[in-house]
Length: 159
Image (cartoon, rainbow, N blue to C red; front, side, top):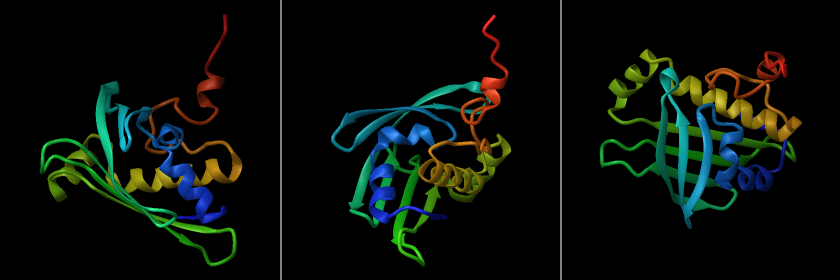
């Protein structure tokens, strides 16, 4: 995903894990509980609320973030996010890889409950781009209903 912002701006925004609920489709809150550890509240399939502890495992300023859930070995979800200067000044290339538990079987299971990992990553990066370039998120693909966009405001009646 190419984002029309400087690498340092994109990296700094993403690295502040307090910002992730602003663009990740199912993360509702992110609370810092340690120097590199965060508790995410996630709304899963059928509206189920889950809490997950996420730990930053590697950081190279303006280049790379790796983080993972703190589940049992073999049950962890891993993310690798790379940041690189784009083809023109002021542009950043962001590349994200998500590894789910149980490999291919895990990806299939997530897809069956409406959470295909590749599509979710793409939608999350699209929202990150929108947020950093325009200041608002309108893309609602693979997100909790009503979390982003104007639809929730349009359906709200004060009386």
